[in-house]
Each structure stands twice: as structure tokens, then as C-alpha cells.
Image (tube, rainbow, N blue to C red; front, side, top):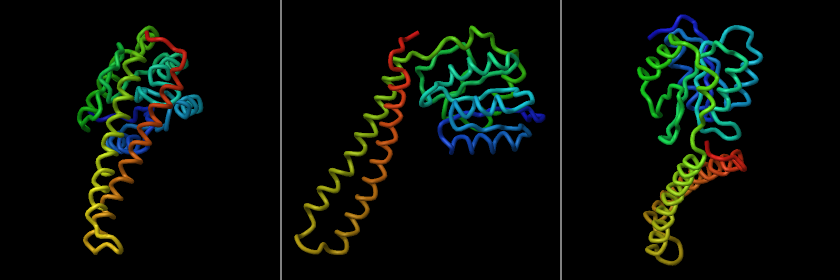
Length: 210
């Protein structure tokens, strides 16, 4: 499952995912090019003068989805291989798909398999995930993040109710600080999920399901 210097263009909208995949591929003698999102991927693909053997791209990203990106890059590089990756079960495509989360050996096995196979046909990248299904999945993710955000809010209310008026005792102050920190962390997570949903809805506005 080791590479021999094959160039892999890795595209994701999360830097932490790009860093992890890049590390795995380099350890196995691949030459990854990482791009934070589709626009950067197109730019790097057009600037790179050599062969790119594989496009490894996330599907659900703000602005342009992975299938649309794959369609554009395949038009410019007909011999490139394409491997999609996604954490959503709603994605439907003839292209090979790596389900997130995946293990290192799963990633390496799929990369080697796809690079060793034939390039996809243009018709293979025309099938996009159902926009309605993706929207539903993203709304569910945002709703779950909102629900989890409310839990520490209720806990914080209970803690403050139990703290005597005036200056709280040390234990009460510690509880308020602990619950407050958890509330802040979960609220930030909810904001990220909400932004992801809003970006996706804006990107697909006016489009219809395939």
C-alpha cells in the first residue's frame, strides 16, 4: 500500500483533516498537495505542471461541493483518478467513496486501489448527492449542536440558583467557571455547525435535486 511518489491532491475544508491525511500519505511515499477548499484546489491544480495521479476530496464543502470540483478537474486532467470522502450517508455517486471517519489502513488501501484503476468517465462525476438529503443532514447536525449547547445552559442555571447571594463560596465559583467554559465550547461548536449549514444552503440556492 506504499506509494512511489504519486501526487495526490487532497481537498478538505478542515485544516486538521488535511494535516492528518498529508502526514499519512507522506509516510507511505506519496507526494500530497493539500488545498483548503475547492477554489484553492483548482488554483493549485492549474499551477502544478506535473501529473496529479489522484484527487482525494471531501464532498460537502462550502461554496463548491466535491463532485463539482471533481467534474472540473477531470475536464482539465482527463487521466486523473478520483476518490471521494464524506461523513454523510446521503452521498450517492458512481465514484469510489471513503466514509469518514476512516482508519489509516483504509485510506491507504483505497488510495492505492483507485490509483491502480482506470480514470473515471466524465459521466461518473455528473451524479451529485441529493441536495435535499444534504440539507436535511446539515440541519440535523446544527439542531444536535444546538441541543447540546442548551444542556450546560440549564446546568449553569441550576448551579447559580444553588449559590448563596453575595460572593459565592469557592466550590460554587469553581462550578460556575467549569459549566461556563463548557457552555462556551459547545456554543462555538453550534456556531460552526450553523455556519456550515448556512454556507451550504447559500451555495445550493436555486438548484434542484438530481
